[in-house]
Image (tube, rainbow, N blue to C red; front, side, top):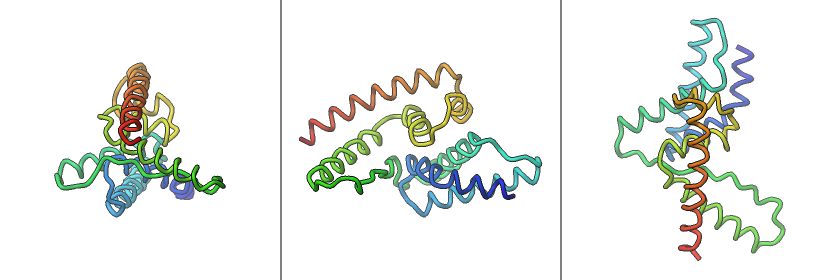
Length: 166
């Protein structure tokens, strides 16, 4: 169980950010992450082994999607902010960075699945292609294609949103 505690310290925040890509309600997201670790504990007891890191993301994704399917009135689809403004000395730069982050968040929320999931797992979760393939149930080559196309779509959405805002 010490290994599970260590994994909780390592994965709780990234899993929370990942779940926030599906559901914006922080209390629901916390419940999702808690349920994920509850299932991990049961998995450890039943199989006498610790699940792989990708397993945690897959379970988090499945729980979030189950909640969305069951509740049509859930507010979902936006990315949590992760900008650190502490290094910005100039207030104008801070405001500009915040505006750009808002535009990026908005663009990412418009990105269709599975592109959004693949991008979030790679960029926020720092998962390997193989781990992402395991989580979303596609081939390794398909993950690479989805990631490439997702980045292209995000770039186009960002440009369109940026010029519409300015």
